[in-house]
Every structure is written in structure tokens, then in C-alpha cells.
Length: 80
Image 1 (cartoon, rainbow, N blue to C red):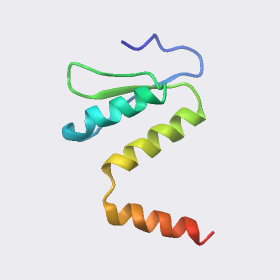
Image 2: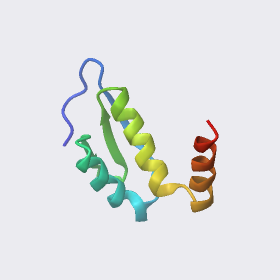
Image 3: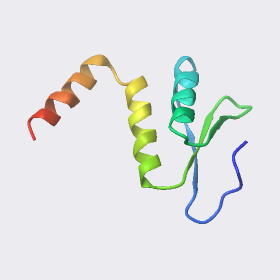
């Protein structure tokens, strides 16, 4: 269960394919980002700061993006 919403804390429901939800949940737990799966099956994530927001985005992309998309992103990074 997530703690109550406080100052500068964002609770966000994240729509993630069911088959990837537990992988993302466990990775966020490893990163010490509070999250839980609610009764409706959605993944709820508590974002306390901008680093947690970036880690959430990165984790979701890592598990949901296609291999080709990840390769394109990496190639763009090498050009900068």
C-alpha cells in the first residue's frame, strides 16, 4: 500500500501490458520506488522527485519498447 499523497508527491496510475506488469513492479522495487498493483490490475507508482520520474520512464520503456526502437534510441545517443 502506498502512503497518503503528501507535498511534492505524485501518485500515478501507469497503463502497462499485463504480461510486463510484474517485471516492471519488481524493477521499481529494486530501485526503491514505492509502487503497488491495485485491485483493478493497474500499477500505481509514487513519484517523490524528478529522479524517480526519470527512472519510472526509463523502466517502462526498457520493458515495453521494441528492440528496434531501443536500438534507434541508442544510436541517436551516440551521435551527440
